[in-house]
Amino acid sequence: MTSKNMICLWYDGAALDAASFYARTFPDSVVGAIFHAPSDYPDGKQGDVLTVEFTVAGIPCLGLNGGPAFKHSEAFSFQIATDDQAETDRLWSAVVGNGGQENACGWCKDRWGLSWQITPRALTQALADPDRAAAKRVFDAMMNMVKIDIAAIEAARRG
Image 1 (spheres, rainbow, N blue to C red):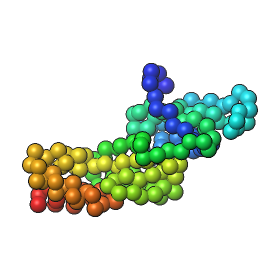
Image 2 (cartoon, rainbow, N blue to C red; image 1 turned 180 degrees about the vertical axis):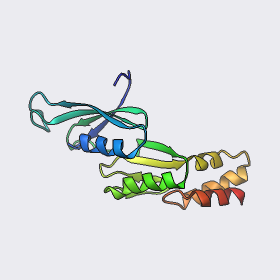
Image 3 (cartoon, rainbow, N blue to C red; image 1 turned 30 degrees about the horizontal axis):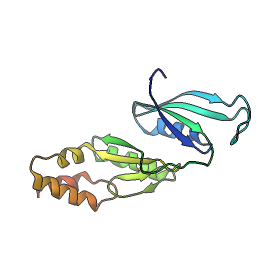
Image 4 (cartoon, rainbow, N blue to C red; image 1 turned 90 degrees about the vertical axis):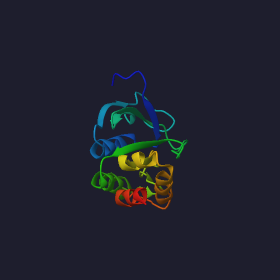
């Protein structure tokens, strides 16, 4: 990785598993360098995977196997823009179906506790509609959804 800045994500021993899942699931994602601990450390042994460089949808990341001290929270999430319902469904099913959990308004968590927003571009465009009444209908419809339903968003926009 040549980026001057990357997101560091803390894992409890599962950085390589998570990075591999993201690389298989999201476009423009790849696992890069894997570094092994040169000696024992508080939450691992010499030779264990210590860090993993990876890219998620073009964003450079570093997975750190730091142990159980810190957990992911909704204060950080990846927002993935989707082009249609098929892509929305595929990504949602991949995250949730791999031990993740559903949340509201297009949010879900992967099995490692990292939050994802699977957000159709149609939703973003509809929320920005200059017709504020249409945007409000879209917002109200979204607030009642778990996974985003593009047809229902479009119907709400039309009124």
